[in-house]
Length: 322
Image (tube, rainbow, N blue to C red; front, top):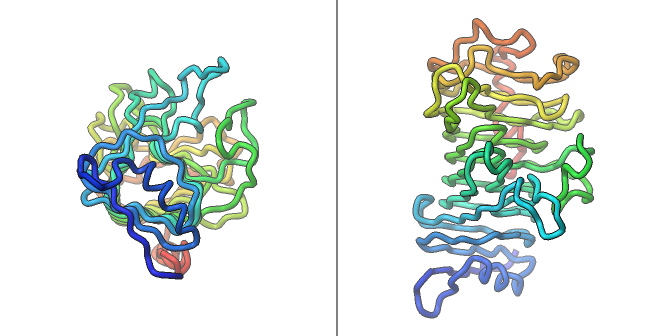
């Protein structure tokens, strides 16, 4: 690939681009090349669609570079229907080989009890990497494509990829902070989370939420893998599930991670899919902390042996690209 192109965005600096949208337009002149968009400190209220491969968004520090928007599922659209989950994103990444470092992606619309689902990130990109980023939201913070083959309710997938072919995606999250409450990491991708903090936000309810809602395709070996992560919260003890299956072959594995007291003692919920107990793969290995007591875990979840856990390396799960 040719020499890397750098484009700088700096709010309030004369002679520099003022918005990330402008930088994405400028990057189109370098199609096929690796383009790094350097984003200086600022709050960028922009709804963005990234459709160019080999693109990197590089911030200076995640707390200082914030991309935010406030669309939400319950919002009424001009044609009279609701926006829905998959049109609520702050940033849609619809191109392969994408990288983001030191950036916050936020959906600021508020509690899902009031606004419904509200994506900070819609990631439909293979070989997507996020390092030292923050993903902030409430319900459905991060969607990792592909969508399932078919929606349960008609119109449930309304959005940019509703009728697009479903391609399996791989993603890598390193040292990121992801916050939300209900199903806030969800989708069908194979995604490896390493050294991340996964923060469950309190809804002041007996059940405060579900961290994952995987829809792993039946023929995929790996879904979500969390290794050396911290599951933290401001929720009351015993009020958050590690996950529930959006579809029947959901796969989530959590290894060598710290589980806070907010984690429900049964660990996992079946979303009223008792028929899928034999096909769901929710597993843990050598976790620690007050939420890691496995004595009351649901019987259809799994505790890995060391030999099984050793197969969940980044290389085995993602291959050589990450």
